[in-house]
Structure formats: C-alpha cells, structure tokens
Length: 239
Image 1: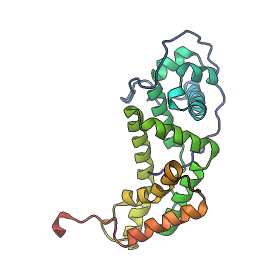
Image 2 (image 1 turned 180 degrees about the vertical axis):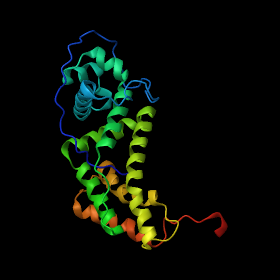
Image 3 (image 1 turned 90 degrees about the vertical axis):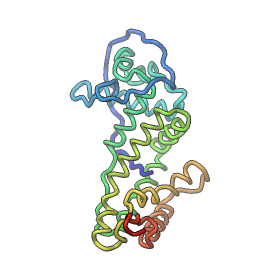
C-alpha cells in the first residue's frame, strides 16, 4: 500500500447557520458509494468551502477519538456547519470517512520522475515515511486503518484510496521496464506495494523507528527484488 503526504492546510471553518436536529448516527451504518449519493459530489464555491471545513473537522475528530468516537453532530459543531447540512450531504459516518479518504487521495503529492528506478522508489518510500511520521497524518491513518479492520464499508473506501495511490506511482516502474532496468513483464503495482509494506509493518505492528534510512532500505530491497525478477509475471505461453 502506498500513501502520500497531503498538501492541504487546515481549512477555514465554513459558517452555516442551519441548526435543525438530525437523528444520531453510528459508525456501522450504510456507506454512500454510488455517484450522486451524499459525500460523492465534487462541488465548487461555497459548497466546496463547506466540504473542506467538514473534512478537516472529521480528520481532527478521527485523530482525537478514533472511528467509533466519530459523530456527525460533533463534526458539524467543529466545522461551524449546521447539522442538517452534514446529515444531508454525507448521511453516515462511513460516507464521511469515504469522502475524507477520496479528498486525501486527490490532494496527495504527485509521483516523482527522477529518470531512474532507484530515485523514484526512494522518493516514494520517503514520502510514505514523511506521511506516517507526521503527527496528524500518521494518527489519522492509524485511525482509518483500525476502522477498516472492523467495518467493511470503510475497508472498501481505504482499498480504493490505496489503489488510487498505487496507480499514481506504478508508471515509474513501467518506465524502468521500458528503459531496460527491470525484466519485461514486471508487475509495477507489486513493486510499489513492496516498497511501502515494510514501512506500514513498522507503523502498525513492530513499532520500530520510521526514518529516512528505513525508507531508503525499503526502496533498495524492492528494487533488488524487482531486478532479480521477483515481480515478473510469466505469460501463459511461457509454461
């Protein structure tokens, strides 16, 4: 899985005087994932400002209270937005988290293009470490990953987030194949996953330090395995 540090700054709170009450929401409710459903519209103008404020507030609440402590009414209060606006737009906690993940993917730093596989993979690994060691971003990802282990809809949203990021970085591996740095048929997505896997292991399992040297070792290991053909996919005719 590959994650990248987002570039957005804390959004200004969007004033919304709507104060109508809405039913209490729980973390296990249905997920809005169909185009046009709450949390999936890409608005502009004031609506975009409201969305930015709500997503910023949702991230803060996730860091402080975790997924199961996330409450739409509390998010509305933090964002200075009417509860009715939040319930109408996102409907559920899982819908809000899904939109937050989509926004994070949209705001993530674009892939590097150093002209060499080693440089590209190192840039990817360092970006992952920078994100996971950031006080806010690291805590936010821990909360979302923890939620994904017990909520299927959040898991699906997280899978889509990482799929987006892997698709962003995979072309650097394809370019390396074209330059002759890697064997033909190398699975670019598997190489990118191999870069970040040990970094997430340290974050979530071992608790070992995450630093630039760790990032560089992860990139070098993935590159060595790829050069050795570990991620080359055999064609059906090769059997």
